[in-house]
Image (cartoon, rainbow, N blue to C red):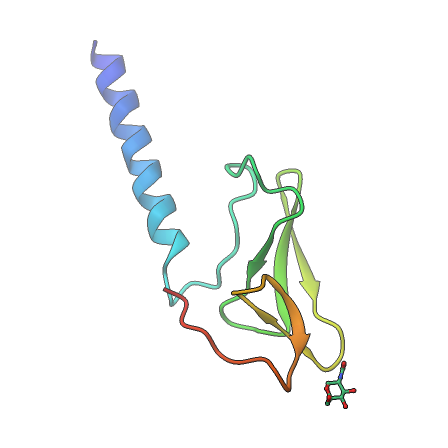
Length: 91
Ligand SMILES: *[C@@H]1O[C@H](CO)[C@@H](O)[C@H](O)[C@H]1NC(C)=O
C-alpha cells in the first residue's frame, strides 16, 4: 500500500514536470525522448534558436539545423522561408 502511494505520487510528479516542460517559455524545449512514445518523425521547437529544432532518435535527442534561409515554425512543425516565418508564442 505504501509502495502504491509512493508510485502514484512519483507518477504525478513526473506528469507535472512533463506538463510544465511542455509549456515553459524560458526553457530551450529539449524533448524528453525517453518518455515520448510517439516521438518518431516528430520535430520539436527550439525555443531559443529558430534556426534549429529537435528530433528524437530512439531515446536520444538530436539537434537539427534548418536549411539556409529558413526558420522553424511551430504551427507547421517544419522549417519555412524567413519571408513567411513569424514568431509564435511558446505557450
Ligand atoms: C525565400 O523566399 C524568397 C522570396 O520568395 C526567395 O527569393 C528565396 O530564394 C527563398 N529562400 C529559400 C531558402 O527558399
